[in-house]
Image (cartoon, rainbow, N blue to C red; front, side):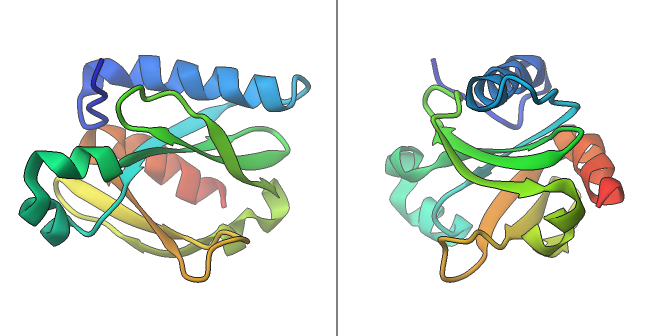
Length: 139
């Protein structure tokens, strides 16, 4: 089933998958806030590639617990997180966000990940904007 992160009716399903992934990684954590988003090629490149760009798209999740922030990623086709890119203690999570650009339809968050040479772009659709604002306020 194709994942459309911008659709509000899929948000509970996406958040549930991210919560399960966090609990698989660390059963002692309690996910409190999930921010789903997408990432992949630049939007102009996506336009040039058309439907083929879907293969390159990824679903990202910022999962905030009482102690940590988990950055999870998975293929857009399933919407289920398959790997943890970073686990950052909550008191150091402010360094995770390099830049934020709010827009009407989608906001962009650039994340500094330890293994990435440059910040990773994550797009958060307007339906997840309240979760993004709560995440940023928590930092």
